[in-house]
Image (cartoon, rainbow, N blue to C red; front, side):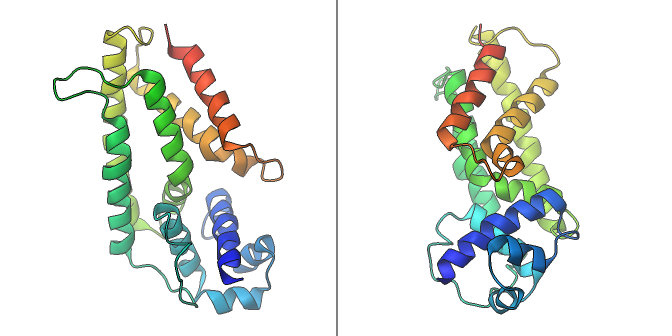
Length: 221
């Protein structure tokens, strides 16, 4: 029963914190959205700060929710979240963004890169969105995330230039704007499409197909 409740709280609290922000989200709102009593909410978490860091940890560590979680859940220490964020950046995004072999030749095409990024955003965007949305409550973590985000933008810009030179995508100007557009398109379809319409969720495969189709029509030669 606790695992089911925690999964529900993770999804609903993550959605509310992302939509309304930490300061404007009340524990009673999370409890109502999760289908539990407010008293039960406070017996499972020591406070709202514990719920926020629980959401971040569960989004970054896919094995966390399936393990044994001691109640009441306490706030997760920043170094723990920072290490998880670093692991996602190094083991996830760095590998997907690596599109050349040891000789510097392209070994991953444009469509494969977009699909890989979509899957990563679908997996981790609930954490990223909440870190960005709630900078005051997660100040130290946001500093680390901001550096990783800057590195991601620079790497994606380099990759677009390589694809353009190889003739895989059309000629582009104002590269930074295209990096932002692609990221916003991928992230919206990967997660925000469902957050915007919680009563009518879009299956992941359908969201990916629509998103990648839009991008391919806009960029491929």
